[in-house]
Image (tube, rainbow, N blue to C red; front, side):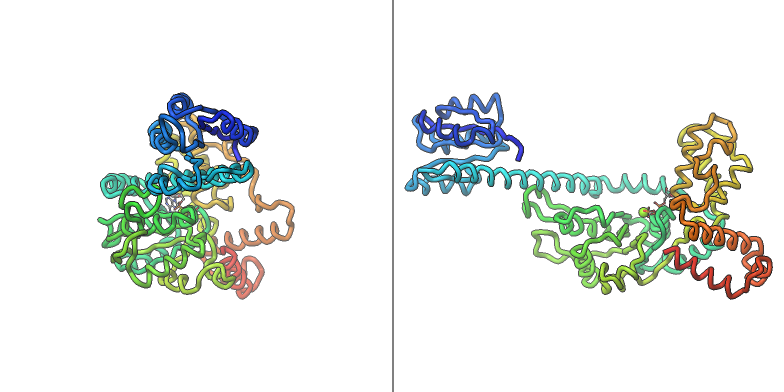
Length: 471
Ligand SMILES: Nc1ncnc2c1ncn2[C@@H]1O[C@H](COP(=O)(O)OP(=O)(O)OP(=O)(O)O)[C@@H](O)[C@H]1O
Ligand SMILES: [Mg+2]
């Protein structure tokens, strides 16, 4: 434990000495011979703990502690009292003016332990208040008043952030999505990191009948365990320390709109149970509230994990999985849709160039070839970051050259994550060659097989393997 400041107060010099001796070493001890002197010290020097005798001439211990609250509100207040006088303290204890009383005569060891225990729960209280404060700030940012503003920004950003693609795979995916955008169906978006899952979730919301409502994104792995209930379902004023107002949770904020449960694979068991309940009942209870509230929310979830596999391994609830897996889509990794790389690169060049106020001419042909050949383990996000880096490195109106590319792109890319594993590198090489050949033969498997000197069945088997490997 940290070395905290303690103020001891007693009118008997011998008692004061004993207190000092007991606490000295583990605490920094200040002393006062009476109430007035104690208050003077506190005005100069707030302390973590005040220990005072109850019976003192002039000002009693309880009186002192009540006054001390004004000078030094955030402290542990302990009173030393005769056994028969405890009754007199009950009011002060019930009002929270006194945290603990210790009857006389006291044992040094017991006193020290009592002080430590009080400090521990004080530290806990502070931590709770801090967390509740953080949650409040987060909720305040999402509160209705701020909301219309936030939404406007969101829509603007969304207009600016168009969904860019050229590949057949993405066109098919969006066509598939068109079937559900206008419904209230729950959508599960799976895909590797950086493939555009959140962007797609917004795309769905903005085209749905709920587009006038809120889009509330929540990172399921980032809500602290003890705040889950309050964060998702809200709370009533006074239901726990720091709950100074009624607050809406994410479900109520998303009422009439869309709740985007991001990283659902990271949701702890406790959260999984609670989500399941709402999805089944369609209603929520605020913490400390008695009344069930109906909420009308469309759920979109996303994860870069394989949820089905997590269910098999008992790491994700099967019943919740069934509820979420109503309409599942899989965003393909960027390396399987090389046509998208170039349009995305051009798009980012223009958009980021505008944002950084630095119009860059374009890419040299060599650069485009490298961009297209690279495997993009971080997908579209990695591409976006690479382009931003290139813009920062280049002069206005310059054309981007190969020398400017990051090493991993410039030096080629046969599995940069795990160099050394020859088998993996060969498999990767094979994969890239097959995909390239397929592209050249416009996905005609028979022609591709002929060109590569393997059977059509092998190609089909390999493609199936690659699909599975994406997850
Ligand atoms: N098709 C696209 N067109 C334009 N921008 C895109 C596209 N796909 C992704 N992006 C951009 O790439 C970045 C990453 O996308 P997003 O955050 O949606 O990915 P994600 O799949 O949610 O990633 P993670 O799993 O890491 O959370 C964002 O800046 C997004 O705007
Ligand atoms: Mg995301």
